[in-house]
Length: 106
Image (cartoon, rainbow, N blue to C red; front, side):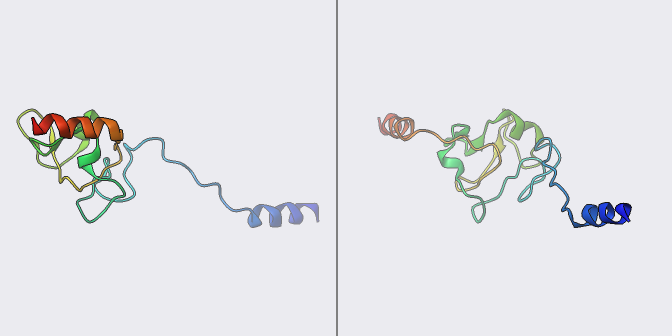
């Protein structure tokens, strides 16, 4: 009888969700491995990321460069859309962004 109680308790427990070890497995949305989504997806934008280069419209984040299947420029940077988004987003601070915009005006 005790065995049956243990068995019922074991069946009632929900499985513990397993967290992926790293993004190397696959992304939930977007491109496998990087999570890159074009302008219609994602919560952030490439244009506000420290790895985004406005002149070449590309991303220089090392994991993105290594794993992405997207087109690349000569330097190996990944061609992205300014309003795209990926798993490696690293947002610029407002001060950094403002300074960069001022420098580009000059």
